[in-house]
Image 1: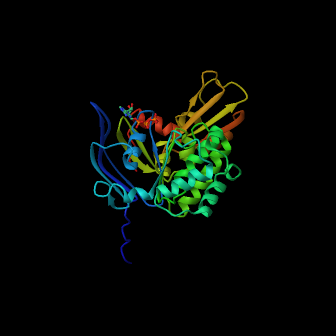
Image 2: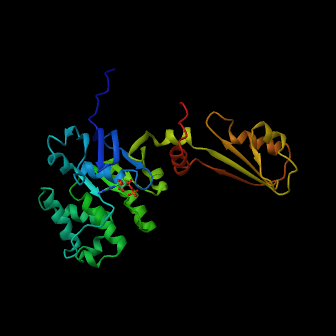
Image 3: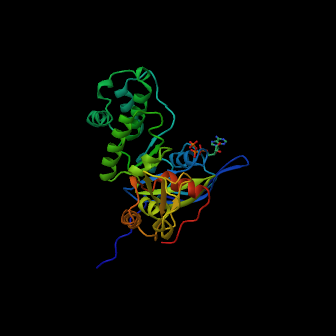
Length: 315
Ligand SMILES: Nc1ncnc2c1ncn2[C@@H]1O[C@H](COP(=O)(O)OP(=O)(O)OP(=O)(O)O)[C@@H](O)[C@H]1O
């Protein structure tokens, strides 16, 4: 069989650094984003996410390093490759005196494209804004403005899209619409880089996750791998009567009993016995079980652990 042909990364950063005066916001970041993937860049406030995105989009002047978009070095051609990029910024940035459709057509022109009303309609429909097509942008509600920001970032059919907290402060419906649309365009080959403080959003969408803190990229990993290796699955068993002590099965599995004797908790880490085995033993011992709850690993817990400095377990 022939070797797979190496694909050009959608985005490749090498040693990307940014200093604001004496403060270093990005410390020599190396990152490669695969074409067609949904990549979530996660980290606390001030970690450097917007600075990284701004550097690629030409809004922030990097201090050092190289950036390539689909193989093209942005130092050699700062304009051409950026036509392939779309950005949904955190802040609303459109002219309030244009209508929704006009502001999308202006965006097409800005990216050197011919007027394409069919594309404008397609994006407006996908983001549920069709009924506001002729409204002035200043007459939109906050959530609609956010929908328009997303439409603006996508109307020129970018191959690489940055979504910088796209659903901050928006309702559940838009969040769901956006997730559906993001999945659709990713399945058609668009590369997505997402930052979000809603870790549920990253959990839902991302193929891979990068964790950044204080300007340093701490980890890049497949989402499923990170959840499996880092996350904890928990079994919580509630008893209808108080237990005087941790039952023998609980002891064998190193579970813990709450001080009131009514709740047993088992943390199932990788390579530990499955929680189902413990549950079977508890039933077999005839314990008065009234409720059983399992909690799957969450990205939120993983992020907290990594930011606290817990090393990742070996595969
Ligand atoms: N123009 C600027 N001048 C000075 N410092 C800046 C400037 N822009 C950003 N910073 C600093 O750089 C650091 C990274 O900021 P950045 O906005 O990239 O973080 P972020 O990860 O996007 O945070 P958030 O999740 O809050 O949006 C912060 O400490 C911020 O105060």
